[in-house]
Image 1 (cartoon, rainbow, N blue to C red):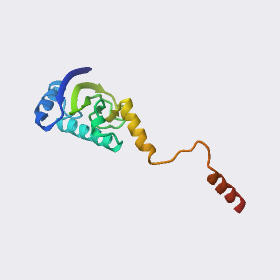
Image 2 (image 1 turned 135 degrees about the vertical axis):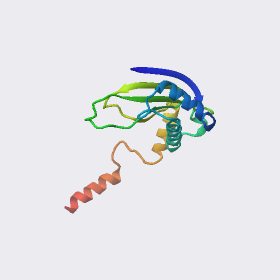
Image 3 (image 1 turned 90 degrees about the horizontal axis):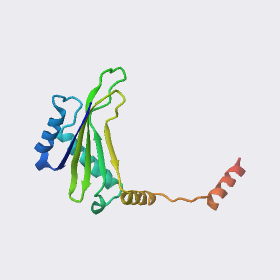
Image 4 (image 1 turned 90 degrees about the vertical axis):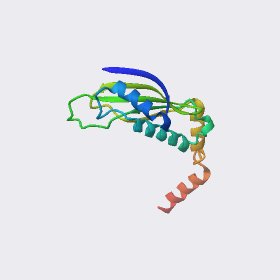
Length: 155
């Protein structure tokens, strides 16, 4: 069973009750592996921290998408389906917004966690930051080749 609910709730403390109500409405009586308002806040914070670590400035973060899957992994011997939530968070210029909540009956192979999707411009910024940490050459430099020859001669 899969049920999706479209919402548009800003992920900020003032909306904690609205987020909890939206989750409660779709989850029904399921509680163990489903998401809570606190989980949504943690996912948004984690996504924001990842954007910071990737070197994406705050002014360029709009358009990123965070997909959060609730629950935790279970052992292979666990034979029953469990109800999980997937929560889609969109990064707007003003912050994160919960845009979609889905509940689905997942088997043992379902992987909980957070997946961050960047726009092409954000990807370019992240790759640019990464490339400042190392130097790339297509062919070995003369220094590396000379060091290899010296090492071979020493044997």
